[in-house]
Length: 109
Image (tube, rainbow, N blue to C red; front, side, top):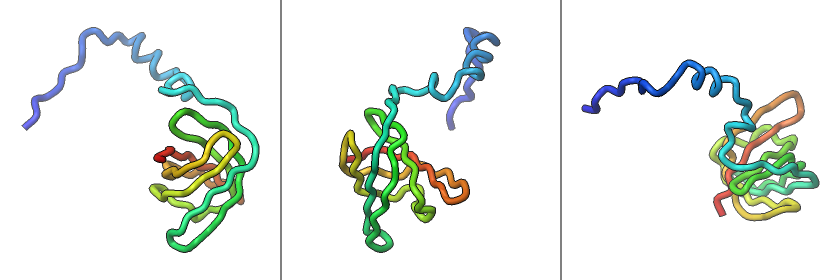
């Protein structure tokens, strides 16, 4: 059994308030760069598909893109090619709004 963890006495309410008001960009571990241009995604699971989209931004370990393929699912591995890089990536999240799908990818190869 793990021992109970107690709150640290060094944490002040100002520290907590500061962490709560940080933007997502301020909490990121890696710098993001603005991206643009076409993006190609392809995969064979469940059947061979090629998707065309647009690169939104990228970092050392991943990228964010917009496309129209709502069936892309979290955890799926895709081959990708865009202006900055190419390789394999895992779908980490999707945000679907009307006919637009925004996805976040973690580069794995």
